Image 1: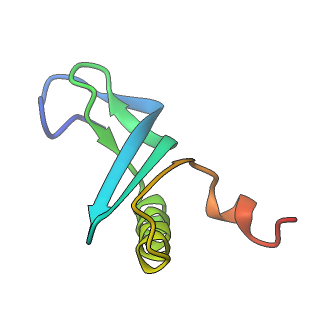
Image 2 (image 1 turned 90 degrees about the vertical axis):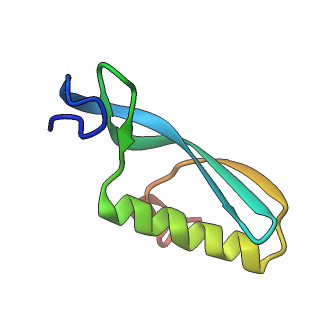
Image 3 (image 1 turned 90 degrees about the horizontal axis):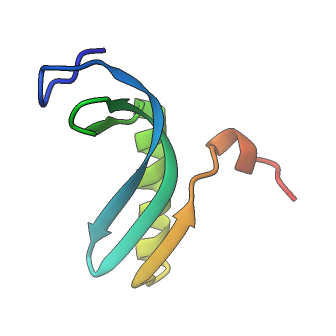
Length: 82
């Protein structure tokens, strides 16, 4: 897809870091799959990935987490895990 921010380049499969903050909780998730602009670095995550990140952030907020840094593991990999 063409980047909607810089309008100069196309995106390609890559990874990004997502930082979510809410009610005193900061959740940093690394290695999130995304489409990343080759020119400006803007990252676009799929809707399902964004929903999963928001769900995890809500859980962290409810648990009273102040700061958490996690590596992204897709929802399918975490279901029925060990």
